[in-house]
Length: 316
Image (tube, rainbow, N blue to C red; front, side):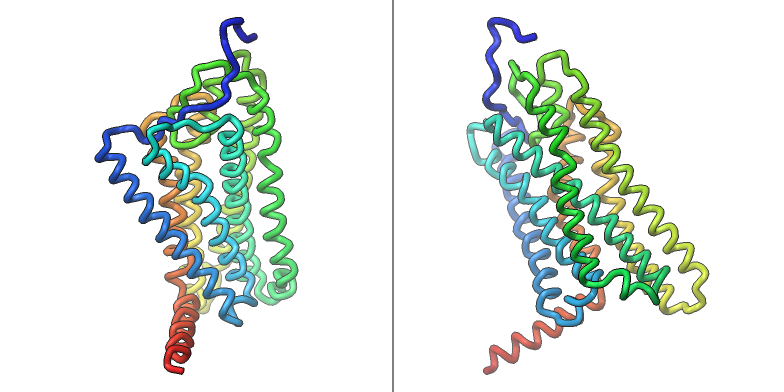
């Protein structure tokens, strides 16, 4: 129940990184460079896949190109706001903008979980069912799978965001975090909280743990199949691809699990939690293209073809 002398909160204050001016300037420089490099990496991958007639027909690279677009959206949902807060003397964000960021960021995160499962499924079908793979994972099926990931990802968080946004926030309005995260938002809500924390945690757990189980099951089956393969060359190549995929999965799920599974919503966010949040919102999207695609031989070959084409155009 609201007290008579309390007023409804219309905006929040994001404390962000805090610290002195020098620290904030260094963080501003670091995040700006990281953001530009991440956009450049992912745009490079998308360009290579779109312009290469061979890669654009392969489901694995179609998934990687859309995953690169997803990574740019995922980083853009939070980093520009962090940059703004680092240069602005006022760290306020309106109630509507805060929950809009909450919804977009978590929807993109859910979509990324689903995409990682889709890529694990693609590798499972390619390695464990190579003869049926072209029919099962056709371009039409691949496009339908990608569309399903986006649609389900953006539908998944409607319920928890709606439930939390309809709670009463009557002060204080200070969020000791980098973004509008449900944990600190719930800690600012007026009691009673009802089922909101449980609803949020259930939706997070089902999305994260459910997709993680599918990924581990797919790659576990792949590894078991590869161990029985007699062809050493194909085994080594497949193990290399799978190992890169598992590194990306470990980085993403490790940091996310540390924040949202180990520390349920409503608990305070320390500097360690802020650092973990910065890692999976900014550093992970920068590392993923390097691990997933830019070390790939076919991507290097496509880059070489593109450079030769550009050289010919320049000579004309």
